[in-house]
Amino acid sequence: MIVLRPAVTGLPCVTLWLRPNRALSRRGLRRLIVVLAALVLTTAGLGAWQGNVFAPLFALVEASAVALALSVAWRAGDRSERIVLDATSLEVQSLPAKRSARFQTYWVRVLLKPGGGHHHLLLSSHGRELEIGAFLTDEERVELSRKLKVLLDRLNDQPRR
Image (cartoon, rainbow, N blue to C red; front, side, top):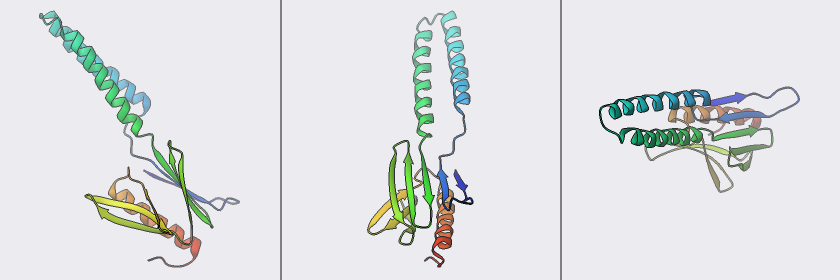
């Protein structure tokens, strides 16, 4: 998901937030885990009622493993990137890792390279390359590439290759 916060009066910078698409909120995830655990435990209870005394034990282990796996997958969606673009620099901050890279606006190039079955969106300047939006879909990467090129063109007042 790409969220564009345009420049406002007094602040000449544009901010782009890149986040992976997430279908569930934290509350929705908790509800899903509770519903799945209830279904598993109900089925295990029926199995125990018919003589399988180990079914509830295995159901608890399975429900715990599924809850842990879903939580880990959901937390992976917390990563994001913030791109701040102003007249002199383009800064990329990776969150929650707090890594950052800065490029001069005039020299940075936006490259879309195919490889591994999908496109890689790269920012390149002075021999350095940085991949951005690795968690986005290919369509979103293409859209982000276009937006960045347009924003950089406006700042530099010249067409880009």
